[in-house]
Length: 187
Image (cartoon, rainbow, N blue to C red; front, top):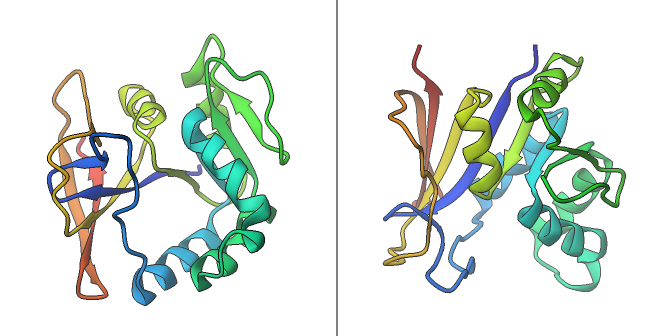
């Protein structure tokens, strides 16, 4: 069975965006870029919440006309060819061949995705879809990239309604700046 891996960048004080919604603080150094690209090459699909999907769908199809950053140019073809799933209660369809889930029984729909053959599903960024899938017990691994910045407020990575035990399975430093903390659910 495929697993869902939640990959998220957060500030040292636990936020995924700043007080004004800003996401201009994560730095993609060479080591972090190489790790990210290798991971994305291996997954069977990307999962996004609606808000992150709208940002991704507006950026990656035309990235070559927007950015000359080496990471962006290397990730664009991976993004284009990798299957995409959007978790949303409001969307009925999505561009770029993406599938939309989130109807009456999100748990059943996502469980069916996990049962399909192929590589793991990588849920990227956002807190809404991650919170919903965490609440349903569907996220198998949490990969939290902690960046050396204190935002002083904003949107927290986690807003669980109940306590959740996690077990650290790995940690790694990238570019002498960012730290990856890999956790699996306890029990």
